[in-house]
Length: 272
Ligand code: SF4
Image 1: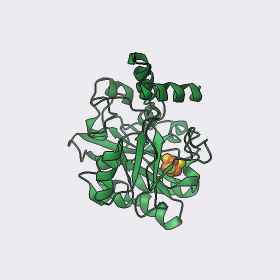
Image 2 (image 1 turned 135 degrees about the vertical axis):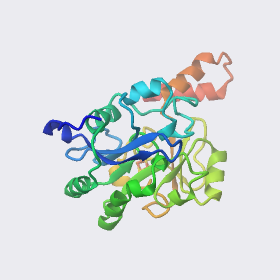
Image 3 (image 1 turned 135 degrees about the horizontal axis):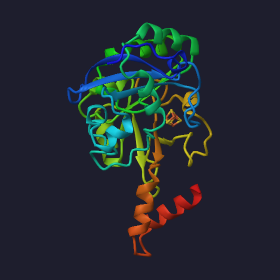
C-alpha cells in the first residue's frame, strides 16, 4: 500500500470507511464513501452520498470484473460477472473514480462523518457491491447519522436468504415473482426487477425514478428503498434496464407469435 499523501483535488472523490475480510468469501474488501463534496452525477438518484463495497485489490473494478473475481462483494447476485452477468453498474465510472482515490488509504470514519454531516443529503449504500459483504458495524455510523437527522438512506442486498438482520435497513433485491414471495415470507420489503411483460403485483408500485415511472422523482426525494425501518411500506418494481438481454431476446426469437419478444421490442422502441 502506498501511504504517500494524495492531492487535495482527489480527496473530494472518496474516502475509506472500513477495510477487512469479506463476509461473503473472506477475501479483502473495503468500504469507500464518496460524493462527499459534490452531487452524484446520476440523474435517477438525485443528490446522495454514495457508499461502495469493493475488492481490496490494486486492479480497478472493471478489470476485476473482467476476470470474474467480484464474488467477495457481489455474492450470488444473478447479474454479477461470475453468474449470468448483465449488471447495470458502469464500473469504469463511479467505482473506478472511487477506487483510484480511496484504494490504499487508511480508514477515516470521523472525517467521513464530518463531511457527510456538512453535505446533509441521503446516503445510498451500494453504488457497487452488496452491503452484506461487510459487517454492519463497518457503516453503522453512517446509518445512525441518516436515521438521527432524518436525511434518509437507500440500500439493497441480494443476500436476503441468509442475512435476515439486514432487512431493517436494506431492500431484498429480487428478480422474479417467486423470489419476491419467498422474500416476503421472510419479512423483507422487496425491490423487484421485472421483464416488460411481467405485471406489477399486489403490494408493489412502479419506481418513480424509472423510465416507465416517467422519471417523476429521484431516489433522494423518494427514499422508499430503506428496508422495514425506513420510509416505505409497499415494494417498488422496475423494468430490467440491462437492455442487452432484451435485445438478445428480440434477436433470437424467430416466432412472430412470441409475445415476450414483442413486449421487449415494444419496450426498447419506446425507450429510444
Ligand atoms: S422506489 Fe424510490 S428510492 Fe427506490 S429506486 Fe425508485 S426512486 Fe429510488
